[in-house]
Length: 375
Image (tube, rainbow, N blue to C red; front, top):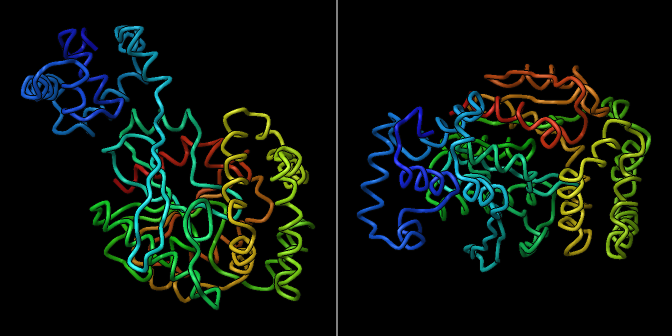
């Protein structure tokens, strides 16, 4: 860094603090100097690196570190260790207009380009540790709200799948207002599409992961036996889904998360292998605890959502959409992606070879590449 940009040692330390997510006032306190001194150093850093903002600086240093080992070798050992061990996940709670409390987490760079990452049936919004560090270096800020009834977000009252969906979307809009975010990139399928359809001015781009929010009974044939039976049960005997979900919760509550996850993924060699990656297993374990924290009702309603057709919403989405799916994800077939894309105004399909259900964790660089298209 010093060789390429001619930064002083103090400027290197300040640059690392900025990349690590500290604000100028936090840096001044940490270094025991006046904030005006830090502001002056930041100005000098940006002039020398020819960047206009902290996000630009983070991205430039990220590209440099990816291409030139000399950059990282000039960062002090203490600073490098601090970046690799620092807690980058931040938990928050906001009060919604109806009095409910809504939880969300942030990962990556605190002033990076915002991405709303909406969790699914079995995945929380947490990303892996290595993904966090990539978000820091490339200037991305992942914001993951816990939908109502999940994690520590209070449940809402509703009577239908569509009402449930709209409450989630309204909660997310309130979160955007709370954070002062006018327009964001969204990583989601059903909830993201509904958000883009109802609030087109708030969504810059949409990425769906291993899912398309459309439904036809023939799609049942694309699911493996276990998932197909769950959906058929949800259609014909929804109360039984709650019973099955309670059985899963008993395993989770008794500390048998690994057994539960192994059982859920036993039909896929790719997904089973993903469980053997420690950081991936960590976020998946967090996910099953997240979905079961308040019981199984929210999960049972979400199962019904998987066979609710939202093609009418798809035709209303104006934002560009990337349909991203793994070649080894057995319930997301090319024909479904193509059908979905044909309804959208601006769609791109990308199949990721070798990826399964946990594409966003095992192939995070692919997701980042798609996000870059919407910057």
